Image (cartoon, rainbow, N blue to C red; front, side):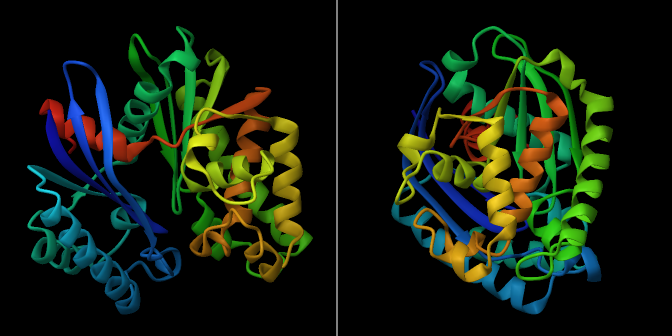
Length: 315
C-alpha cells in the first residue's frame, strides 16, 4: 500500500487527491479529495499569459494543499498541469511558485498524455460497466477536451486533444448573460470543427460506449438525476441520455447567471461556464450518435495516483 498525492491543475480548477493505492489488488482508497476553482486560465486565450490575480489564487490553494499533504504523511507527490499551462509565456513564474510551496515542479503534460491518464482513472473504476467493448472517454476541461478510445483489456488505442473547453468557449463566444443565439451558434461551429478533427484521429465509430469525465459532465448528470444537492456517489456510474443532455444544455444556455447559481448541485466556480461545458457534451453526443453518456467521478486524478503507485512516468 502506497499513500500518494495527485494534483491536477487545469484551466478552471485545481484538485487534490490523497489516496492509498494497492497495486497488487488494483484498489484505490480516497483519503482526501478536494477541488477549488481558481480560474488559472482566465484570459489566457486572449493574452497568452497567466494574470497576477490568477497566479495568486492558485498559489494560495497550493499552500492549503501542502498542509494537507504534510498532515496525511504522503510518500509521493505529483503535480500535473494541463491545458492552460501549455499555452502561456510566463510558465516559469507558475512553475517556480508551485515548486516553492509543494516541493515538486509541475509536469506540464500534452493533451495525449492527459487523455491516457484520464482513461486509466476512469476505466479502473468503471470497468465492470464498460465491459469488453471499445469505449470513447471524453474529459471536458476548462481549456481543452481530451478524446481517448480504448478498452479495459487492451488499454488506449487512440487519443487526441482539442482546444475546446467550458472556460475557453465562454470567454471566446458565450459572453452575454444569457448568451445570445448568435453567440451559441458561433460556439457550436467552433466546437463541431474541433470534434470533427478529433474524430478523424480517434474514429468515434469504433466505440460502443461514451464515458464522460470532469465537472461539466458530472454537473449535467446531477441535474438529469434531479438531485437537490451534489452527491458524487449517486452520480458516479450513472447514465444520462442524449435527449436529457440536449435539454439540459439548452436550458442552461438560456438561463441567467443568477438562475444557474440557485441550482442546488451547482458549484459556485462553475456557474459562469457550465453552459459552455454542457454544450460541448451535447455536441459530442450528437457527433458520435451514441444514445447516452456513462458518467465517471474518477478521472485524471486517479490516473495520476495509479502512475505514482506503480512507478510509471506521468510526463
